[in-house]
Image (cartoon, rainbow, N blue to C red):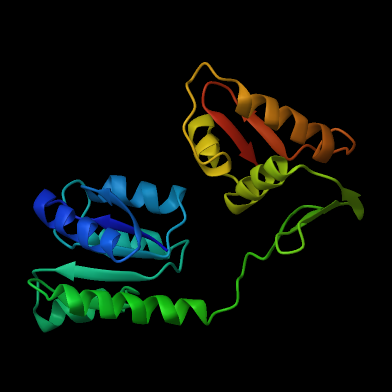
Amino acid sequence: MKILIIEDEAKTAAYLMNGLNEAGYTVDWAANGIDGLHLAREERYDLILLDVMLPEMNGWTVMERLRAHSQIPVLFLSARGALEDRLRGLGLGADEYLVKPFSFAELLARIRIILRRGQRQPDPEARLSLADLVVDIKKFRCERDGKLITLTNKEFKLLVCFLQHPGQVLSRTFLASRVWDMNFDSDTNVVDVAVRRLRQKVDDPFSERLIHTVHGVGYRCEKAS
């Protein structure tokens, strides 16, 4: 399970990260609202721990913008414990609101409850599609215009990554971290080679291209308007 902490106090963030790592969770940290919202949009997390009083962008705004496109579970962690603050956080779509200071044991208990709720929901992304392209993740199957396309494991993961972020510009570094689970030097062209091979299979035989190059930035997968 992967958790994002959006918290400006470094000591609090370190305390949370250490405890959650010991509990078996993978944890990322953002020290302000803008960076936190960016990570929440670019990466896949099972839960976000969100402070209210943040630099750059406060937690209320982060929550509003996050809910505009995502239903990822959010647990507010804030020193603002007034009833109107708790009601505001929950009203914006948060799953829980925990007031600082809190017991780490209580935090873990609430995290487990939230994550169990999410596990009971069906996976909405077991089947991904764009235009006439359909990918079934569980069956490791790809079709376009009714024609079966054979992909390697990396090509399949790369295509799934594109379809999970439709219309978004994905950098080579982001694709490398998601598909190969590691960072590559900027001089390495492994991502470009993989994208070229993927295009040969899912784009070249068809009239409409879905994978587009954004020069100097990366790639975007979308249906032409």
